[in-house]
Image (cartoon, rainbow, N blue to C red; front, side, top):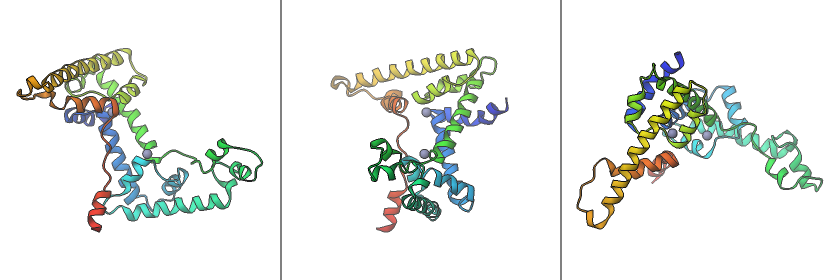
Length: 247
Ligand SMILES: [Zn+2]
Ligand SMILES: [Zn+2]
């Protein structure tokens, strides 16, 4: 299947690098999408309209626009958004929330719901949209690669840290052969069982009477468990770099 082949090498490399392979692919796809938006599509009218439709970006992806050489492009995109917001204030009936806020201000109808609807974007963050498509495609490809008979990824996947909880749920929700879902559950169980053993060992060595013992693979077990339940740590924006340049 072409789709699974397209992701095979990326998934294999991501498994070997540790961490959830879908988190890794999602992060890389967000990076390349943001780079394209800032450097290649800033003059693309449709791309700029798409950013206006969502009134910008979600918190995580918005702050990733702040990168060396990228703020000029960010300014162009955000100028469109601010202009659209001003237009919505001037003509609330043209905003995504329609005229309900206007009516509420005039005491006609509405209430909290009307207030919340006012200035609601017409679309989700464009980076989120893009990443969700990549995640779903990669999840389907992973299932194909874990299917018995085409199980080229079973070994590297099981040797790695497996999927984080949200991506495991996403992958199990994808259509596919029953054996592929069963293979994924079996591999993930092996990984979590191994991790639980390492956590137990880590906790034991935290005890004062075993403090002298050196740590092995369990050293970062708590961190891997955190990544499974909470996802990868938030990516730092380059705001600190910007501040360093100013100082
Ligand atoms: Zn993940
Ligand atoms: Zn987003």
